[in-house]
Image (cartoon, rainbow, N blue to C red):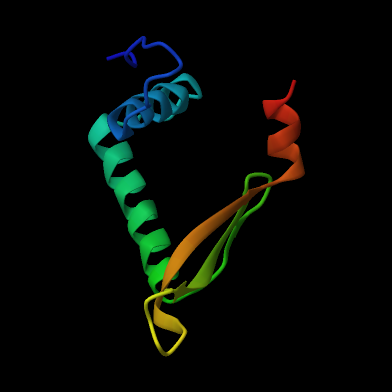
Length: 107
């Protein structure tokens, strides 16, 4: 099964990525099924998720760095007699692409 041919503005789905990886591995002589590739990709994503939950930075050489940032929230309300009201902060994931990836993107 070949990946769907879609315009660039539409998102690439996980199943499309599975198909692309399976085809490239099979071209190199590996005998991977789409199920094996899907299991591998799901396991990889679960490991990333666990690392993010632990607050760990993930560095993928020649790709980029994923960092967890804690964003605090503060609201200045003109109606509050106490001034600024502080709300509970939340975590977010920040990604910084490697120089090599940026260079390939801009070629």
